[in-house]
Image: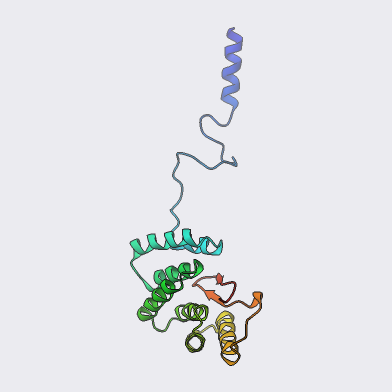
Length: 182
């Protein structure tokens, strides 16, 4: 009996874990706070890329509560509403963002996308033209959106192919794409 207890204690001392999961465990850690929280704006942008517009809208709303209604937050809220098909809200939010940051090509591009979706092609082409003129990088997305709006203006029956949809832009490295016209 004594040898059995000694054997169990010896084996227990050799195990690496104890009460804590090993560092190379495939399971998420529990009970231990690690790292910084991801900002709500970044969470929202990741959700937008995953086409989770409702969840992104919630994340952007939390960011608005923390940061205020900055142009970036307004653009994000407008873009999420656009993804949900709420064109009136999207246009209102993007116009508010444009009023706060008149020379921002990202704001103008996304406003132009909403205007295209609403069938306001003339105004959309003017907004895209201004966005392209203000864009120091001459973004291919904004250029393509301008080209598509002008083509639709010249030929009202013009409908771009699915792979030529009007594209939203965000600050950073990713794009949002709206899949089709109304």
